[in-house]
Image (cartoon, rainbow, N blue to C red; front, side):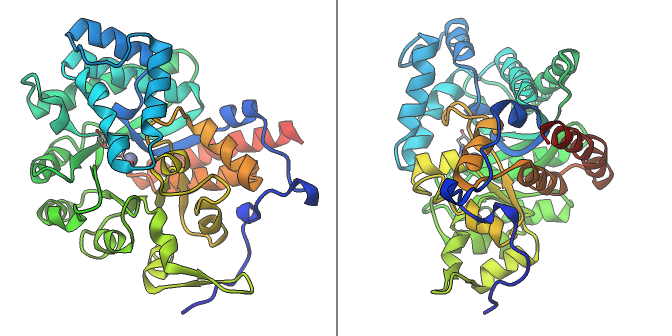
Length: 385
Ligand SMILES: O=c1[nH]cnc2c1ncn2[C@H]1C[C@H](O)[C@@H](CO)O1
Ligand SMILES: [Zn+2]
């Protein structure tokens, strides 16, 4: 199989201070640099204080604590379990307080504002409508409340001087059987802010092809699809997602490294699936901190994002769940700067990768790249010279 050739990307080398490699990026520069986020769960990014207030307002009585600071720590510690299934158990409390239109709209509005304050200029945020019907809301009411919340949050962020555009992805739970209904909702709301479809939840034992009819329907409707695959389960899941389900992007996809062999001389040999994913430029929505928590990667320094970047896969950097991972886009980039010596040029490369992979129309992606990302990185680079 093909052996890696060609130019090595600057993000390739692990940071080695003794060798005089590049300095870690200043936190302020990382925050101000424009960022694009493709993989963020609405129910994984609530402010702890909001959870406490919504629990009181809606009569949700199962929170482990009503002290917001303690609650924030509880989520990170409980999610830091080494298992995706245990990580996912923590969502009972966020989903538990997101069962009314007001709560859904508030969470969505705050999500847009928090991302914008962190320098995110474009985000696709996902959630599973079927998880928010415990108190009798219709799926359409759930979607409409979230869409209204995002619009409100965008306006509030713009008023505060931080412009952001938020697209919505509708997720179907892979462990349930409502994927076809959710796929139909994607089509209904495609011109009102919904930009694509996803499946999420426990991966082992629930292959993507279980939802084949939803994927076939969406492809027939020319809709965009991303699939959580290759996170808690390996290559067969990625293969199905790519070969049979027709995904445009892979959620995580981190286990694609199982199809790459590092030779004794340090070169990489790609198997057929890894080669296909790279050749087709299938974007990988990588979420380093989340992967460390669920045991999909041992540490930042050993996270496959270093190798996959060096091999020029279409890598993107994402938060997954800001609450459970105690993270933000800036924190993810700072960790990568620390682990691999990433600089502003690497951030810019990853950000343009993400925008090229976004599910909004091509001309709108291009406008963000040319009118927002490139000029702002150029200004930052000039400032930090
Ligand atoms: O990283 C993940 N892998 C699989 N499922 C996930 C992940 N993060 C969140 N979820 C689930 C839990 C949420 O309730 C659901 C919809 O956002 O998606
Ligand atoms: Zn996810």
